[in-house]
Length: 473
Image (tube, rainbow, N blue to C red; front, side):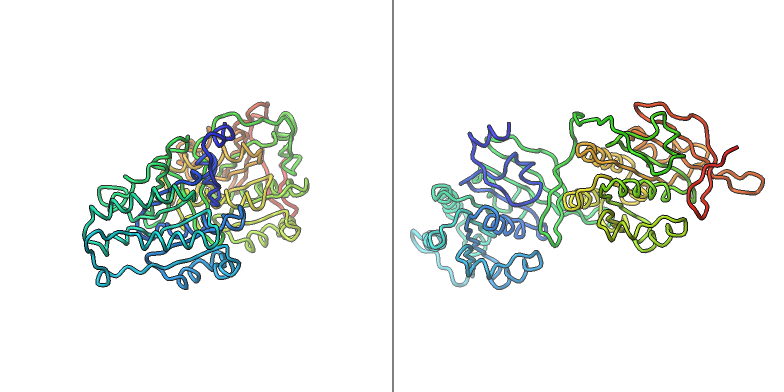
């Protein structure tokens, strides 16, 4: 469907990870695109990445005309993203032009227009054969001109001129009070308008993107979180997916025969999701680590998200029971990513996972524990995030394991995170501590296993120096 649409409606790659999927192929080719948003939302970086990636990946030279920042400032600001503007300028692939707007230096007389700007922009485009153009931010012209009616007419002419010139252009604009931009630029860009938003919720910053309109093309209509890091801008395209992913019949092991044998088929299905619940000290992380090692032994990479322990602490603690994770890390089979949940919002955690999956290409993903996420979102938000996460993992046939700390020993169904994810998980293992004769006894119970039978009773187990052991009666 996407390929047929591109033939009728030519598009050009955005150069921004995830955005081409949302736009069904990229921006409209040879047409203007409006990027609007409040200060600090990433408009300039968004536009610059579009240019730089176009040069490096599509061999399409670009012109960046700035009405605010100088060429030197722009080069310095984007160097941290790995964009070497000076080198691209030397190669005659990029032209950066700073147009200074000073009200005191502008005199409006008679039939005054933006013809000088047209000539300047035309020269920049022709000098390097540019296919992509950025105007950042053209609204600065309004601060220098008093006759807004005249200026609107000139800007309308500018947008039409860009279209006739045959370039794909990005125009940035500041968010207005009652409109998308302060001066209503969206009225003149009928092809594609994208809104960027930077918001603070419960002291946690989140950036989001929404395609307001995209004439002649289907596109995602939801809000999508995006991240700015050392690799540039990445957009998370996954919001909700159809239930049309594959369901492999192949079995995988926990690396523990005692656990595998609790399932009728002596293991769990490949690509399934497993939830391990339990109160503090019931060995949830230990079972998760066995699962990780089992994947490593199959030479399948593992991505381990730890919200409570640093990689060094996790490795040290597991060595005491004979589980050696360091060698797997050294062999690049295991990647441990540790961070506090409060470091960023739920969507940003999901986006970070999405990026790491694209980079590391794991076959197994472990999140330990998902209950920590409740500190940065309510139950419905956590559930929505986990639905998207599980869908993403299933589409990629990734083995997923989540641990969750439960607080209510008598009724774990009332626990917020268990309520949010238990119905979504394919397998559910509950661990518990019971005081028997003044000693704490650990128990394991398989609550559910979709598509196969399982042992229905509780089994006692202990954690010894040699690791996990079932207690035989």
